[in-house]
Structure formats: C-alpha cells, structure tokens
Image (tube, rainbow, N blue to C red; front, side):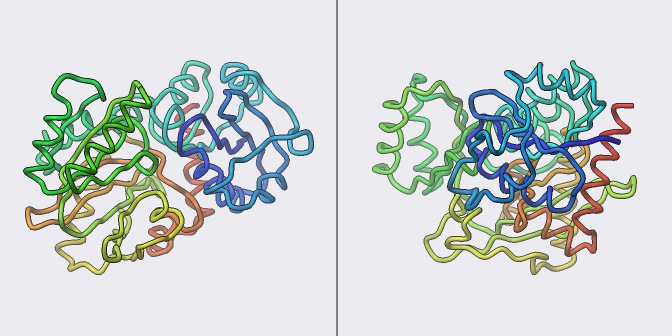
Length: 344
C-alpha cells in the first residue's frame, strides 16, 4: 500500500490541520507529504519542511522553493496523479471543503482511497442542524437552537428570543468546524455587537445559535479497531471561571483543563459512550469520529459529531487512544488499511 498525508486546505481550521499532520507524520515515517494551499494548489513537500514549521496554531505553513518537491494546479490534477500512483491518502484536514464532503466526493469520483467517512456522511455531520435532526429521531436529546443567515427577516428577533429564554447563547457556523467563528453571547449588547460585525462583513454564511447549557462538557471518540467498532474513554473539558472553550482554549490551552478519562460513574460513562456510538452509526460514519455533548440536569445533550477530529499530539482522540491502550501508530496504520480495503 502506497500512501501520503494530506494537510492544509482552504478552511479556517487549516492551521490545526498542519499541527495534526506533524503528529501523524511522526508516527508514519515512510510516506509522502502533501499540502493543499488556501489558494487551491497542491504541493508535495519535503518532510523536514513540515517539522521545521513552528507554532502551527498561529502561523500559516508557507511553501517556498526549498520546501516544494512538486506541485499541481488544482484538486483534480492532484488526484489524477494519486490515482496513477495507486496512493491512499491519510486526510489530516479539518473543516471546510476538507471535511464537508467536497474533497471526499472528488476522491470517490477519481477513484482515490482516503481515510475517514464517505462524502455523504461528512456532508451530513458537518451540517449541525441536519445532523441534530438525525440523532434526535433515534431518541438522543439535543441542544435547542435556531439556524439563520445574517440578513434574514426576523433573524435578530429570533436570536433575542433565544437569548431571553436561555440567558446566554453560543453562535457557530452551521456547516464548518466550530473552533473558529465560535462566539459566546451573554447580553443584548453582545448580540448587537455580533450582529453589527457580521452584517458589516456581508458573509453569505449559515449560522446556528444554541442555548448555552450548564453542565459538564464531554467528548467521546468512536474508532474502528481490529475490525471492531470501539468506543473510546470519554474526555471532559473543565473550564476556569468565566473561560470559554474557544480556539485559544481548545488549541492553546488557555482557561481550561482536559481530563482523559473523564471522572464519571460507570453509568455516566456508558451513557456518554452510547450517545457517541448512536451518532456515529446514525450519521453513517466510517473509520473514526468524535462526538461532543453536554451532561446537564436534563441528561446528555448532543452537540455535534466531527468526522475528521483533530489529531495533534494533545488532541482528544490521541488522548483517548492512549487511555484505551491503543498506540497512535497502530491506529493510523489501521485507518489506512481500512481506507485501502474500502477502495479495492
């Protein structure tokens, strides 16, 4: 099996993608490294160029004449060569066209193997409204919210109503990763400021506003391991007073502590794992996912499922794999074997 790691992309989470690629590449020594630039070009890069890149969460990866081996002008040209090389791609991509099914669909059309869920499952999971509807139908409780676009008639009034009934709300992109673009709104002034900023930006983007639920923030991975669907030990995000689990909290470790495995009773752990497994299965996912939820006084409330969750050294999936006694290298190789088998 020939394989390569693909990272970067055009999404707001491309910085995280680079950090994930660094960790994956550490475990998979003999592979090509490919970078998808935010301008849509693809490059094969020298291995040392990836490892020499410092502070990936804050600074963009730049391709220059010293780092590039080869380049392709667009996704179809890149995938055409991957097919001729009979390569399987390990997708170290997050958000946007790397996770919403677009790139997966191009791979399927071109006959190139790749890790993670198929295009339809990626598209469904990325749409936070549609995915919540799916899991709600199978009996999983979900956080209440409203979907909208800035400029819709009555959108401000709908948000004001949700804010009034909830006390605080969270606003995030409807069909993109939640780490970037996540906003916490606690007052009418906060809401007016957010609306003003978005209206000024004039972005044609869908949003989801959800009630801010008081409770324990849990996240649980599901992986295919030795041909068995395995639910990993849950993790908990413990926030400091007045802190939010936003980009800086999630990737720079500011204002929170991540606990893996979470300090739960057996019943609580089993229930959290059940919600994650139900979501993974109902959304038609494959390979591995991570599902976020809140343990509240109303029970466990589903938030979203990530089909390509972060794989940085300190991300939740690597933490949970370690807690389950599964080595990262074993996991990554297993995902490549699954991807290869699916395509042959």
